[in-house]
Image (cartoon, rainbow, N blue to C red; front, side, top):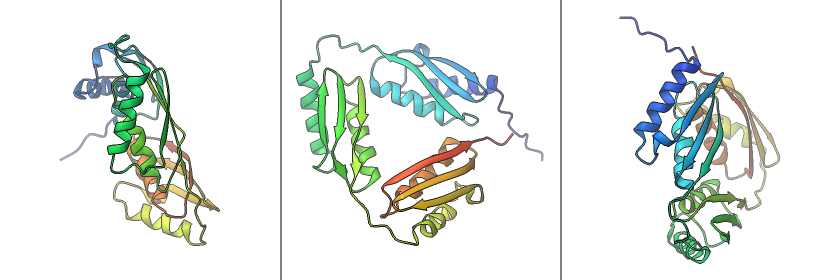
Length: 224
């Protein structure tokens, strides 16, 4: 039995992204335009909130053949003036307080419907969790995640440990990725087959207790 090899032309990618947007319940697909140029997907149109915008980007990045996303979407909330800055502030405060993976060190500044997160946390997953908690709230149009990581102690075998973590991951072609460590900063270079693989490699690097910066220099190049 012969299995056909997928061809990632811009037309195929555009159709696949449109299908994935339609398949994603959190996204109002008819309101989003999709254009593709050499694997780079541009999303345009108006969406009803920041979370819809974020979900649309994530949906597009799940599609094979997508090498990058250009976000030209704009937020056109349907709540009008019914949600005030005070309402947003209270919702953000409560959400961060009840989020089990977000420490008390995270703070939020509210200006209108825009949220800026600051403070320091121990792990990158806590920083990402804070952003996800806030972006889902009604009344939030934009989230700037400026949370930093607490200082780390560098050790000489950090590169080796990250390399082993990447090699263990069944979703990553470890031979195509180069890991370089300087102090507490990690730089990942090489070629990966999808954004999912790229994110897995980043996650492996962030999991090190001795890393406070990860510079992603990897290129997404699907196999044709």
